[in-house]
Length: 151
Image (cartoon, rainbow, N blue to C red; front, side, top):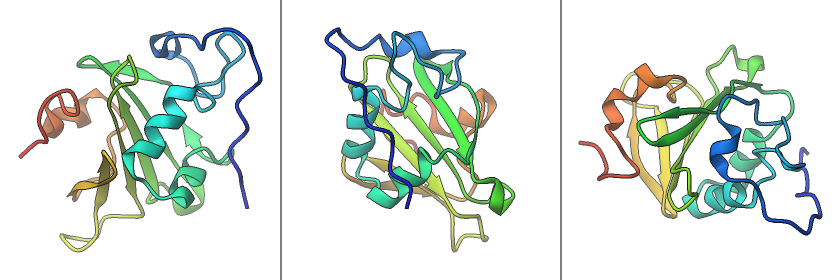
């Protein structure tokens, strides 16, 4: 069982989330990685995504990109290489940490199995494409979760 690393014990404030843009999520900023950041941890819990999915997102064996910024949001994407990318995920956050959504998919099968988007405690919707990994993948989401749920 993989357990996310505990947040470090520090007396200062956590850095702004925007400080992670262009960085790998395991690269510390002021001694705190993206995954350890209290706003990221709180956002994952608030999204409603299952605890086991949270653990799989922060699993050290994932292939993970760098934190990017797109349309006023932060995007982080990763996948489990054991499944050749079929199990993939994304975290989409407003830089102040006030809103976040988590996408998780174990593969796309027609319109039977897709990528679930978790937001504000529940599955908000399912898309039948992999979780977004770059800005071009974000067209169908418009400016969500800043704006309304797409569709």
